[in-house]
Each structure stands twice: as C-alpha cells, then as structure tokens.
Amino acid sequence: MNDDHRDSGPEAGKADKAGEAGIDSQMLGAFVDGELNETHRAAVLSALERDPEAKARVAAWRAQKAALRALCNAPEEGAAPVIVLRARTAWPRRMALAAGWLAAGIAIGVMASTLMPELRRHQEPATFARRADIAYAVYAPEVRHPVEVGAGDEAHLMSWLSKRLGKPLSVPSLREYGYSLVGGRLLPGEAGPAAQFMYESASGARLTLYVTRIPTDETAFRLLRDGDRRTFYWVSDHLGYALSGPISEAKLRAIAIEVCSALGGKPESWQ
Amino acid sequence: MSFEADVIGKLPQLRRYARALAGDAAWADDLVQDAAERALLRRKAFEPGSNLRAWLFTILRNLYIDQLRARREIAVDDESAPWRNLEAPRGEVDGLVLRDVQQALYHLSMEQREVILLVGVEELTYQEASNVLDIPIGTVMSRLSRAREHMRMLLDVGPAHKPAPLKVVRNKP
Image (cartoon, rainbow over the protein chains, first blue to last red):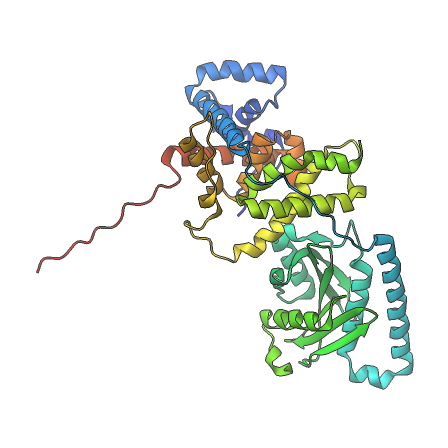
C-alpha cells in the first residue's frame, strides 16, 4: 500500500489544511515533534489559540505520543538480549576465492568455445548456466552492492526486469529454506539481457536465480559443478533458469525443484 | 569506546523498536540478533559521526521487511494476531488505554506504524527518519500526519469496533 501523494518536501503539504485558521497538518506535526524553529513555533502557538480544531488535534497527537512511549518503554520480561556472532569466512578471502572461480569459469568457457564447438552447440543451455555461475562468483561476495534494486522495492524490481527481458517474471519466496530475497540486477546475457535475483540466509550465505530468454524450449534439468559451487538449470516456457550456490547438491536440488514448480515449470518430468 | 561497545549500548533501544514494529517478542529478538550481527560484520558501511542508532534501525527495518514478505503469506486472523498475545503493560498509565493504543498501532499499515514509532518513540528527527525509511522528508511528514490521524480515528471509534451481529429474521408464512 502506498498512500503518499506529496513527496516534494515540507512545502508540499500546504494544501492539507486543518481547520478554519488553515494551519497545515504537517506543520502541526512538526510542532508536536519539536521540528520547528522559534519563529514558526510562535506562529503555530498563536494560530492554535484561534483554531480549536487544530488545538484538539495537537492535544490528541501529544497524548498518542506519550501513550506510545509508555507502551514501548514498559518493563521487559525475559532475559536481556544476547547477541551471538557466528563465524564466517572473512570477505577478502571470499573475494579471492570468487576471483579464482571466475578465472576458472572464463578459462573453461574459452576452452568450451574453441575446442568443443559440437559439444557447445549440443548443450546450448549450458552457456547460460555458465554465465549464471560466473555471475554468482562475481556478485555473491559483494558486501555493499550485491544488487542494483533491493527487495524493499520488489514491485519496481519485478516490473523493471520483466520489461527488460520482455517477459513477465516472478520470483518465489525461499523463506522456508531460510533464504530471503535481497534484490536483483540486470546483466548482459548471451543474446540479450538477463536478470539475477539474489537470496541471502540469516548467516549471509547467498543463492542466485539467473533468468534469461532462451530460443529453444528444452525442459531437461541439469547440474553444473564448478569448484564448491553448484548450478541447477532448466528451461521452461522459453526462459532459462539457473539456481547457483555453494550449498550441498541435494539441498540445492530440492530448492531448484521448488523454484521450478513455483514458476510454473514441471519438475515431475525430471524425477 | 569501541564500535562493538557502541552497538551493544544501543541494543535495548533496538529491541524496543523491534518489538514495537513486529509486535512479537520472539520475532523481535531474532531481528535484533540478525541486525546486530549484520551491523558488526558491516561496520565499514557505517559512516563515522552519523547516527549509529538510525543506522541500526535501517538494518533492522530491512530485515523486517524481508521477513514480513515471507510471513505475509500466512494469513493472520484477528484472534492469533501477535498483539493479542502481548500483555498490556501496567503502571502509571491505565492498562486498558494502553491496550487500545497497542491495538490501534497494529491496525496501522506498516508504513504508518514505522514512521510513528521512529519519530514518536525513538525520537529520531525528520531528517534521520527520512534516511532510515529512504523517503523524502516531505513524505515523512505527510505519512506521519496521516498515521496520527488514522490512529486518532481508531482510538475514537475503537479498533475492536465490529459491525453488530446480524439478526435472524424469520419470514412468517
């Protein structure tokens, strides 16, 4: 729900009149919250004397504020919060590892394209899986900018990437598996744009779902191994999907099946 | 004082905000744990000299939104809603009134609730709230005044206001 109509600063609320004397409702709020300078404060104070409706509003808001504070400051039951820091690989090391895998990925990619042209053509979807795998290696270790658009703006994220890929996209929730959506980014794919969605667990482990358009419509479900990373990939309704992460094959497979069926695929056909 | 000590010093306020926002003590404690952990691991993202508390609220809020999206799929009926299980605090203020305030708070949309909590309870300035919520100050102000009016209306009418049960009227033959 978005009920914000005025986004252009404190002046924008002038139309929101409260009562005959015309004291702006946002001005009253600023008055209650101590956000006004002395001049404005004095102006509101004198205006309130002529505006009983605004005065009642200020009184109600002050009472609300006091009640909310009383509510939130009620003595807590239970133990004081204890924060447990879980051990994790330091990120420079992860970065180095990812760079290594990236180099390996490129090397294999080059090898595949020069030495094995037949194989490459035969397993065409593997190209997008490879790209997905490399994209994982590049972006998953990102600390500050893992995604271009965060999941906080999911509607925008989905409409933007759907528009760029020219197909309506959706992403399933992986909360059941302990992963929540971080956001997504647009990437160059083999023959057009690709979308990468990133998920993260509470301990900071990441999975990515890579989506791109694929001319063929092969539905096989395949696995790509690269170091400790696994990528399960499949094609459904002319969209290639690749789910990558450094977790166990069995677990990743289970999640991939879930993702596939959530997105309208038919994982039964692989089993 | 070290960064860790600073963060730890803010935990009680972080917990207060989490509880009020989520309306569920266990969930709130998980959020505080996750937020503190994330904050300590990402300390480099913190701009020294800026408001640490506001930064921690931002982290916690992002986690909450993430988790909320997943939980929203689970239908919450009024009887099992989190605030039903919260004990209304006793003290100088009349417990019954606070219970009404509490119910009204959870009848607000999350957008309205968070702004009213950040400014009203946590006493962030409009500028700080605008940073935490990632919206312009003008939006903070308009959202805040709508939230307050909504809450006022709820408290006037009563959040538990329900339509009168329908009477069965028999048609006489």
